[in-house]
Amino acid sequence: MLTSRVLGKNSGLTVVRINDAKNQWFVGGERVSKSVVFHLEITITQNTNTFEQIDSWIYSAYAALKDILGAVDGAPNYIAVTCMDGQFWGFDGLTQYVRSGR
Image 1: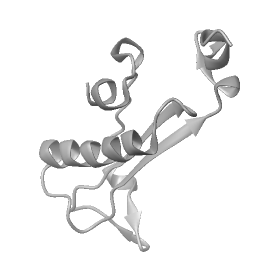
Image 2 (image 1 turned 90 degrees about the horizontal axis):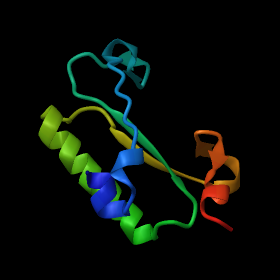
Image 3 (image 1 turned 120 degrees about the vertical axis):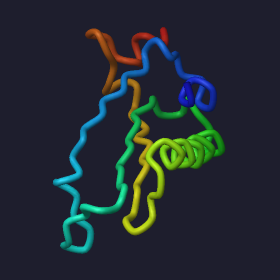
């Protein structure tokens, strides 16, 4: 619901995939086994949100994950927003550009 509330995205089209990969995390060449660590990435269509909205989403997503997962000290936790040109991505066989009616 965070993505819907902060970025105005349709929650019915928001897909979440969670990979438990704690045995695959390395920071500075060392395996991270005791710390909570995450990498969150979202893809949105370019120019559909302001920088302020994206900044707010990153801050809020970090706070939410910290609340859910507990202490996240010790390793860097990255959150990335990938802004894709609507001509080059979509779902169910249609690009976001076509869906926008441009």
